[in-house]
Each structure stands twice: as C-alpha cells, then as structure tokens.
Image (cartoon, rainbow, N blue to C red; front, side, top):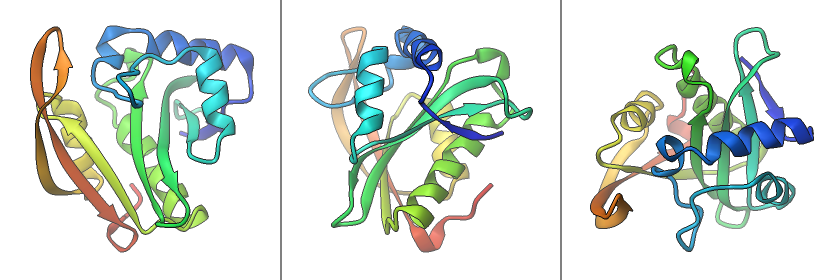
Length: 169
C-alpha cells in the first residue's frame, strides 16, 4: 500500500465520487458544515499548506482505493486533524484504512514535525473508532450532540496522539 499525491485529474474525480457518497461524507466535517468535496475543492485543498491529502492504494501500489489526509495543519503549534475514507468498499475489513491512517500520521510526525494530532469520531462510527484505537490515539473527551446525521444529533468522541506515542503499522 502506498500514499500518492493528488496530481492526476482522473484521480481527483474518482476521489470526489467517493466523497459524494452519503455513507462516506456523513461522518466528516471540513468546517462550516461542509461534508462533500468536489474535485476542484480537493485540488485547492491539496495545494494549501493547511492540508496534506493523499490517495492510498491497494498492495500493488497501483490501484487507488481511498483517500487520507491531515487538515488544520498548524506549523506553529505543530498540530493537525486526520481523516480517512475508504472509497472502494471491496477492500473493507482488510486493514487498508488503518495502514493509510498510520502512514499519514507518520508523515505528519516525521516530515512536518508535528507534536500532537487531534482526532474526533462520531460516537456511532464503529469502524473509525477501531481505527483511532488501533493507531494508539487516547480518548480525551466527548463533544455532545454536535454532529447531525439524518436529523439526529450525535456525540463526537475526541482523541489525541503525541509523536512519541505513534507506532507505524
């Protein structure tokens, strides 16, 4: 599995298609209620210093199957927030999301010099909860009734991970 930059228009379109699926975007929040990302939005985000976004591939390193990123990258305070979407659900349950998250965390800590990465997960999202736990994030709190899905209010569980606690999968 490899992380690849978003430098191909076809790849951007494919990722935008994944991001437009409710099963994916309902768990996300890119600020001001923005959940879906178009190819244009992805391209702009990928060019800004506050985001590091990569496609991740299957084990061959050739077939893109998802997207992973760090957003809200703060180079002064050395912090960021991760996110991950497995676009091709045929690869679900095989650990690709866990490994992609681990690799983007390693990039953040090693290449960007981040000290602390903060994550939140909708409390009902069992898959994402397993991902942050598998990647050694520590529960630090709960933000109550702050995430809406289908008109229902959900809590977000808050996690963080220090560079010294990260062990690449």
